[in-house]
Length: 232
Image (cartoon, rainbow, N blue to C red; front, side):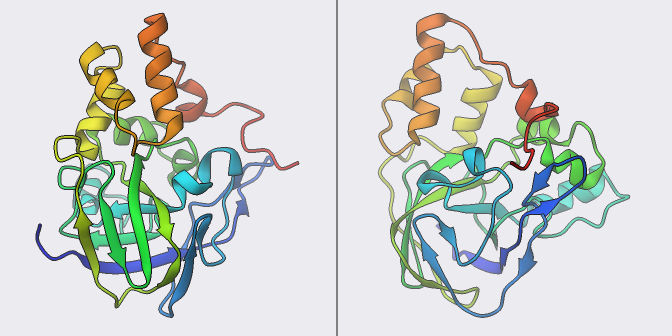
């Protein structure tokens, strides 16, 4: 694997977008080092703790390479990190190049790829593009999440290094295609279920699809519901 270049590290505060919708997609760059712990990066906040945080989604990584695509597709927006609400932006590491379960050393922390990101309707609210989550899901430019195996201080000027690859055939790009483009293909679902490094939520969904032959409804995540994301 080529050297991975960290372009930026980002955290933010949860914001009210109106009508009670709480979002965490508006993040800001941080130059100083931050403590990366099992629940997230520094003081980073999350709009909906049910789906946007926790040990399986401690850090969101989005490749900087994708923004050239979004600039061409939607030139009215000056796309740049962290437009997709990412915590970490890099060059030379995309969904095709990273695998489920990959372990990375970043500063004093040890990370493991836990699952792809499932884009949600908060992106639509932020950028005024109703089908943006669906576009990202269809083209696989979603990014991915890490779990934190060892907490530690991290910063943009510290190396980001792959130290172990246990599932070389199970790229994040493959997982996204399997999960969303061929959602009932048995062999793919079986590989997801049998990968212990994959987040339990993804494996549970794959098991349910295999058992029922049905795909869950994605509309609440992609389009939002009246009560989704409302503050208590």
